[in-house]
Length: 439
Image (cartoon, rainbow, N blue to C red):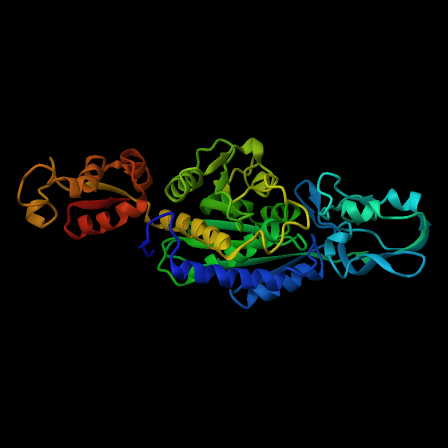
C-alpha cells in the first residue's frame, strides 16, 4: 500500500478534494427514503454501483436467519396530515422523516385527540423532526417538530399514509476485491436510514470511496465490503457466510457516523483484544490523540452482531461522533451542514489508514547478531559527535525490538511512533538486507 506522505492527522488538498466528492455523493443520496427493505435501498445501491462493482442480493420475506425472520417489504409513496381546509401541515414529500418507518397504510379523518396518540415530537429539541421506526410491530404514525405539534388546533384532520407491506425481499450489496491471499479484511456499513447525513450517508459514501481506493492499490488481503440494512441485514449476511468469515477474516470494521468534524472514536470488540482493536487504537492515536474509546458495553450498530457470542469476528466500529453521542442524532438536524466535506475527508482518511496499517503489519527480525553496522550501509552518520545519532534514533529503536516476536504495530507502540514513521525505515532496512520478514 502507498505510504502516507503528509503524516497522520493532516489533510492534504487532495484529501479535501475527496471530501468534496464525498459530500456531493451524500447530497445526491440524501433525499432517498431508505428503510430496512424496499425501493429506497435498491435505488441507493444502484447509485453506488456507478462507482464500485457491487453485487445486489435479494433474500425473500420469511427466510429464517438465525433467530430472526426476514420481514415483509415496505414501500411508501406519499403521506400527509391535512387540516379541514385541505392544507397539508405535515408532508412526507417535504421530509421523509415525517412518517414512522414501516407505517401501515391509512386514509381517514380524526380529531386532534385521536391524532395525538400517533404523533411523535421532541420537547427538548423543538425544531427537530425525530426519526422513529416500528419495524416489528404494525402501527402507523407521524413525526413532526414540537413547535408544529404545539400549533395544532382542535379540528378534524385528514390522515393519509400511502404505504404497502407485502411479501418481497431484503436487499443488500456486496463487493469483493481479491488480493494475493484468501485472508480477508471485512468492511460493513448500513443503507437503511432515510434522510440523515452523519448517521446514515457518511458510512456508505466513505466506504464506497475506500473501496475505490483499495481497488487501485497493490494488496495482500482480499476485501469483502457489504452495504446492508442494519441489524437484520448483518444477521442475514452472517447466516449465509458465517463459517467462511470465521475462517478467513483477520480484521473487520463497521463504518458508521464518520462525517462530522467533532471527534474520532471507535467501539471495541467484546474483549478489545483483536487485531482490529489494535489497528483502530494505533491509527486513531496517530491521527487524533484525543480520540474516544468506547467499550463493547457502548455498542449499538452492527458490531452487536459481528462480535456476538458464537460469531466472534475480529471487528470494531469506526466513527467520528459516535451514534447516540451527538445532539442531532436520529433527528432532522443530522443534515448536510453537520456532515461536511472536511469531516467526510477525515472519516475516509481514518478507514484508509486502518487498511494501510493492516497491509504493512508484518513481523521482522534482524539478520545479524549484535547491533547492525548501519554506517557501512549509509544509514548512520559517519562523524560521531554529540547528537549525531538523533537522526536515526527511530531506526535504532525499531531494530532494538525487531526480534521476530513483535509485529509492526507492536514495535510502533513500544517505541512511541506511528506505523507511518516506520514504513520507510522498514523499506530501507529490507533493501539493505538488515532485516527479514518473518512468516
